[in-house]
Image 1 (cartoon, one colour):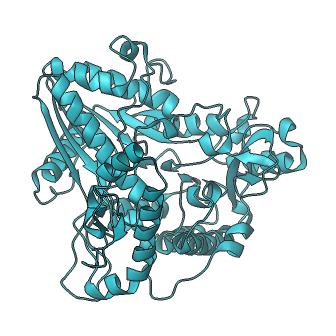
Image 2: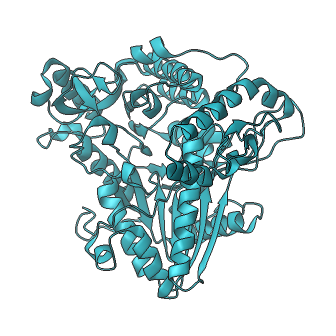
Length: 519
């Protein structure tokens, strides 16, 4: 793959911007493995189409590719995240659909070579939070039962068979009753495995923000309706120490062992978030953080930055990170910031009835944005991407008369000194609760290359050199974005406009007593 690096330039990690680049590369990595593959993903749908010429040579979908590799004798060790069956039923069904797909692929390949584990995070809420949330959980389960009743018989049986964790609360499902069973009071699983990584023959690592399904496929043009856009970033590295650290991490998770110690040497370095079940305290909702490397690296990167911090994130809700950015701004009056956020969270932009958790998340993000803007003043540009086409929607999938481009990437770059790409958003959940994995690198060629690739993605093709220079980029981005707000959608240059925090402030709502890490 042409990664856009300069001739003779050695990169320790190759960035893959959008699934247009990442999905074909992931196919090639699977096809290139000769002995073993270790992987951990949140979502991995084998119905996803194959995109690369090499992939299409073996079949049409990832199901065909997995069968092909198993028949070739490649041993696949795969960890799939499972989800709370009542509070995240669609994701829970998706996990068990993928389990069924993998098992069918194993059978077609002769019954060997696949080690598959679908698992929820081990943390569970105490008895008091279970009781507190029980009315909401009850409403969710009753809603699922009503949805089952409205399906045709074959569809109903299929949906119920995939909702493995809901069965204890549905009475007489095979008789067609679909009545609610009050007991037992269901457990609440507050955390999840959010990582996305794979190791191939212990020599190459794919890691970042992308899971695998058709929803996540998009290309750099984002020439599709707002609800189908998806900007994301992953990287591939063959650095031996980093690959070995990721391998050890996956082996420990699949083997039910404690997480290995941090990677102590090498570039890039693996960084993680890992938590475990909390104490038996009946009032406990939160898991107990064990490893907070992702958070610590962000603190370190912010404190060491000299000229420019560039961030892309799906969520900016972790107030300790907002305070760290504000401290860095006050300490260094030459430091500037460019941050790209989606105009609205996915569940607010594209779902008809976002819940209280979405309102709480927007409340926290508005607070974080205001704190950072206050500290940096005009030295900060906080932007959001829009498609350069008009939209008639009146919902939050539209801003300034255009469809939004949805950002799912998790990238932090400081100067040409440090870069971090992974699965962790800048929210408390990613920093302290969920299982997350990423890589941090500090060699100037790789950092500069990543930054330029991302700048090129958002800026117009004729953007001035000042938009790429560390000292002048913030001002140039601000000017391009301001010009775009004055232009009709079809005349805008590139994707960027200033982020509007007011919708988040108006929609957001504090929820006293609820841990901020929940969102």
